Length: 260
Image: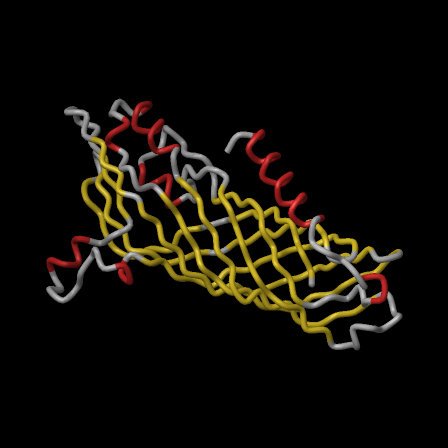
């Protein structure tokens, strides 16, 4: 995503937020509970043209552009939210987190590898649905400024819609998809195209902070961990491989936070 597009996105969100009526906030506690976070996210690393498609994916290289994230949640404080003490703590539960990225670097990968851009399919998206829950602590160092810090466990479902097929007519043909077609040969009841068999599941860990004044702030979260996914691949010199493997899915998020 171009820098101009990123700046325009945040400018629009900020303008929308400042237009929300904030009457009565001066009398409200700065330890707010419900929140909405909207922003940008990055998934994994860029592609290495010296590696095969399978090697790229298995090393956390997805060729994904900067994408979007939206989430809703609540902070459950142990102390009364109207406490005059500068520190409060409790549980941060992000009820729902939605992520979306496009993996458009595969077009350039095909060209650099001697193939054609059409060898990378038009559907090159990665989406994720998760919930996040864990302990958090809030600091109120001055005035209405609050710093929230959290560590959360993240049960997550990811869906990679990518079929890469490089067929240049030479000996460097390559293939990769997040579906295990070889299993259909030994299990007639298994449908590799079924959405549930193309999902990747895992439990990851999220580290995050939010710096806010009253209801508006900026949140940064880093999620790391593995998901288990089906795959099929063909690499020159290696041949065909298939199965179910764990892959690393590091994810960085920068979000505008609205705490209600």
